[in-house]
Amino acid sequence: MNQNKIVTINGQRYDAQTGLPITPSPVAQLAKKASASSSIHTSTQKSQTLLRRATKKPAGHSVPRPLKTVGHTMDIARSSKITRFAPRTTEAPKKPNTHQANTDIPASTHPIVSRALASIAPTPAPVQKGAKDIKNDAIAAALAKPSAKHRKKNFISKHPRGISIVGISILIVLIGGYITYINMPNLSVSIASAQAGISAKYPDYHPDGYSLDGPVTFSDGQVTIKFKANTGSDNFTLKQTKSSWDSSAVLDNIVRKAAGEQYLTSQQHGITIYTYNGNAAWVNGGILYTINGNAPLSSDQISRIAISM
Image (tube, rainbow, N blue to C red; front, top):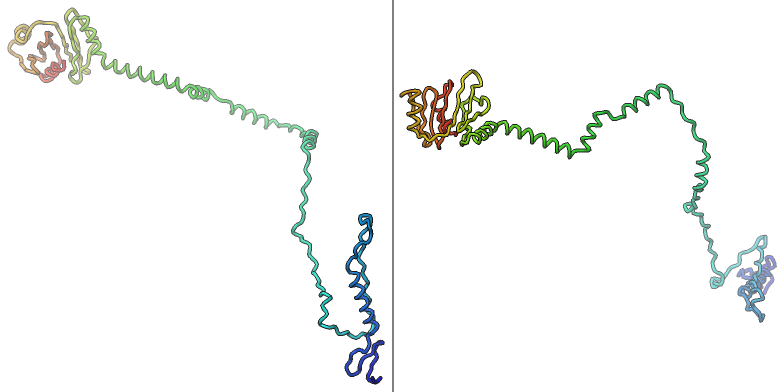
């Protein structure tokens, strides 16, 4: 090969026409040796000692890579078939998570220490009240005391059953008194008839404007009831006497002797009633009834009195 066709650059000879190196350069040989040695020493060797527990595990040997020479170098073309060296990947540094920060628990005071501090704490001095405050307190205390009315109300509220019984008793007495007052004439006549020995009655009807005058009087076989006008001096007396007469005997012995032939006769419920000069006489059930007085009673009023007995 001609020397003119060989070019030497940094100790490496290249073909001038093809540009390929004729003999490998010292740098390439050194790199080849380093790769061969590193491939041998990358894996750890098996221990050759008999007692493995007493010896340490041998560390892997690595050959430092040759430093890149400073100067003008020419890039070496690498074959695409070489897959021995894995591509280098660079991982991004992880950022610290600021959200998961540990929260500190605040310190707490022990209960015994708290009680001790409370016991030695200074007590506030009592506040001195003025004369006006003392006066207002006395007035408020006097107003807060229950009065006599409240005590009476409290007694009623504490004994509602007793108050109810007393009220009902008073109401019964009043009603009984009113009923007794209304029925007093009937009671008086009943007592008088029992004493006289006859079956006397109090009339259910008496003319308007007239009322019972005095107590009911009685004698042996006779009961007398007096009525008087509420206004004026008019009055009449109703007598009930035990008798064995009939209507004819009443007409002959009483009516004709008092009025002659000046009388009126009426029949009411089988009773013969004789009226004359505002007076009347009739007999019923063995009892002779007579009405005498100065009251201007009509024959109709007399008939109603006779029917009501």
